[in-house]
Image (tube, rainbow, N blue to C red; front, side, top):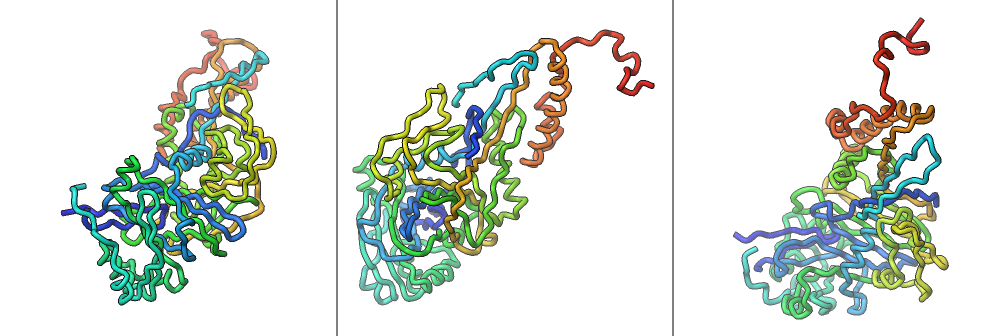
Length: 462
């Protein structure tokens, strides 16, 4: 039996084809990018003056001949409005905006020393359908093929329909396996007078172009609707979906208007052993926050002016890369220069770039997110990032009053880090303490044999 794979294309839908301002500083050491998550789709939305450029990256892992995507769009799409993008640019955007791990090193309390710096930077072969459906048959079903395009390795149709039953029938006859329940969702888009962007892979062209993966699709359109249709992709999904949304705007941060947008917990000190387990930490931390919010919120992971970053999980995108994503208001200008710190940290721009990035992360299903995502751009330009801090303890043996005080406080600090980690992730705090070796003696001055014989003044003595 053939296996049909539903792969959420940018949280829109992928249907199987039958047949075959305050500086944070610190030193960056790790990032939590989209590769940590399964079923993770990405979409970049460039938005200004009702103009939108949407870049969609799909995590489809099956046979390319079985891939197709159906995306509701608010207006008719010309050939010139469609492009095949560069996955590397989207990967760069992901890396730049990803939640990050930073570390500090405690200084010797007995001396005035510079902080140290860690520079570690870290299915069976079957014939494909012969056609996507004739125009004559489409007309009898109330479906109109508005346009046909060939863009890169994709064959693309722009459809309109009078009723969902006809559209569903046409898609099935044309080789698409439509999930049960799709008709109702399709009907809601038809009532909104939306068109349907339908794409599938042209295997001959893909082979000729030499690509072994599916490149992102890009669509530029003009509409007062600032939204992302996600419902069609949940119809027969086999569990919650993971969606990363990057918006690039001129004015400020973007938020959802029909769901709560919540900032991810950030700025916490966590145990240093998480340095080697940051991926597991971040996935479990995000899952815990989703659970606390009953999987009904959109999480803000990053909001920043594209001019700079601190600390940088990756350099800001160049003007060329931003134009590739569709940032149409940029003018040609000199590129930013990087400070010579030895590690990527902060980019100093020659002038305002006028590009503000908002990164949102949502885990959802049809029950918890019954509506499409609707957005608005705000004037808020405050910097925000998902950022987690490792503070390495000073382990020297120097003796002074400040060092003794430091050692006494260190045990409490480690306990607080353990409690914080447990609260963020839901992990067992006792297991965390074991990994941290909290009971391990703190280096310092060795006690005399008689010091614990009798209570000392101020410590319980009379």
